[in-house]
Amino acid sequence: QLVRRVRFNSSSSLDATGEKTVQPEQDVPGLTTFLESLKWDKNNLVAVIVQHIDTGEVLMQAFADRAALNETIQTGLATFYSRSRGGRWCKGETSGHFIKVQKIFTDCDRDSIIYLSDPIGPACHTGARTCWFKEVQIVVDGTEGKMDTFAVIHEGAHTHGDHVPRTTLQALEQTIAQRRREALQRPSDGSKPSWTVRLLGNPELLCKKIREEAGELCQTLEANEGRERAASEMADLLYHSMVLLNLQGVEMEEVLRVLRNRFTQSGIEEKASRPPKPQ
Amino acid sequence: QLVRRVRFNSSSSLDATGEKTVQPEQDVPGLTTFLESLKWDKNNLVAVIVQHIDTGEVLMQAFADRAALNETIQTGLATFYSRSRGGRWCKGETSGHFIKVQKIFTDCDRDSIIYLSDPIGPACHTGARTCWFKEVQIVVDGTEGKMDTFAVIHEGAHTHGDHVPRTTLQALEQTIAQRRREALQRPSDGSKPSWTVRLLGNPELLCKKIREEAGELCQTLEANEGRERAASEMADLLYHSMVLLNLQGVEMEEVLRVLRNRFTQSGIEEKASRPPKPQ
Ligand SMILES: [Zn+2]
Ligand SMILES: [Zn+2]
Ligand SMILES: [Zn+2]
Ligand SMILES: [Zn+2]
Ligand SMILES: [Zn+2]
Ligand SMILES: [Zn+2]
Ligand SMILES: [Zn+2]
Ligand SMILES: [Zn+2]
Ligand SMILES: [Zn+2]
Image (tube, rainbow over the protein chains, first blue to last red):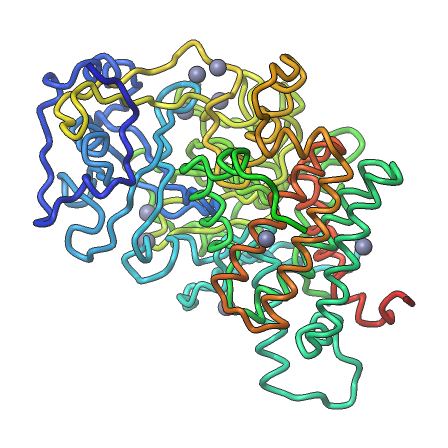
């Protein structure tokens, strides 16, 4: 008898014909106990949040009934209960944009689930990466220091995803990409270009800076400069490296995927059995 | 007349006495139109997901009614409708663990909201960083290659957050921290230590590697080695730098906060007005 974790990301989830075998809940040892332990709402649903395993992006939010959770657990493909259609809904079944669920979590009071996932293609039916591409913009209409009037403007027409809820790393990546587009669109008008634009246009300077920042990060350890300096130098190194990634056409998402693949194949620890590269 | 974005993170959200002024919805230009545009469920609620602006962690999930959204927008503090208590619930009002909302997003069909946030303290009432600290563990009980029996085991007793839904960067950080704890707990038994443990115990080797990896990343650009090499070298550099951060007691979260603060103060672009450091 062998007990091991299901590899949700294994290709076994979907065989060559795309067929999935889902057993009834009660035929799966432990499953009924687990499903009973959840706090179902009045409609016998729990909320489900789909989060990208590499980038942390929240991709979509929907609801699941017992059958949907049963199916997700057995197939490794994100499945929900559609409130509008009143029935089962396996994301990707019509679009091909399946969401491979890597890990499943329940929240503290057991009424909300996270599917930590590796999506195939865009998660939103509009073709956007995530369903949250509309930012609620809030402007203050008043004199400085006296914020007594608010206006909420919703940019409903924006479907191109420029307002996607970007966390810090994604926002930085986007800023760099934006500077590059701007620099390409309107070449220097004589005004001093931003530091990012200078780096983008001068690979030699960029590489010099990356080596320098790596040295400064090391120095925080070598010269015992303290944790604040370390955080600051790491930020420098990360920023400059990400400018290089932009020039190479690489997104942080790909870097994170490389790191994840090294993990799950115990790649990092595997290195232990190899000596470091000869110098 | 001045129109500008509300700075949710400004201290003006909470004055010295902790008092917040919330105007009625109709006194805020544009707010009613925005609230009318949302797709409220049968209980007049929308789902709300609270996400950490720096790390991307999903911190909590709850629901909001019109009043809760009105209050959140005006105060910049995450406020909800509590289904169990049947009323208003401003997170942190009793615990002090307020959640400062930096940006608000609506999803494609306008029934789910993200509060992109900077939390003060733990988001979960249990004291955990996020509400999802319980992983649903799925084991396969069968002979290799024949996954015909599933068992779902929920580790209900685990409240210390060791199963928090970690995205790749957090998982890597955690693996490094784990290696460090293991190395401290049981000193070398003569078996070959993992590469991470070797780096942790040899700052000289670590710094040598970081400088090396920075060089290798630069070389992908200098020698035009292509995007795959660039992603791989960036992964190397990130991993080794994060081992250094662990030795310095710095978490990636802090590095990301540094980057965000530089942004919002236009720090990166501000550098444009400064010449690069003299060599
Ligand atoms: Zn809950
Ligand atoms: Zn969508
Ligand atoms: Zn836009
Ligand atoms: Zn520096
Ligand atoms: Zn929705
Ligand atoms: Zn909680
Ligand atoms: Zn455990
Ligand atoms: Zn544990
Ligand atoms: Zn390398």
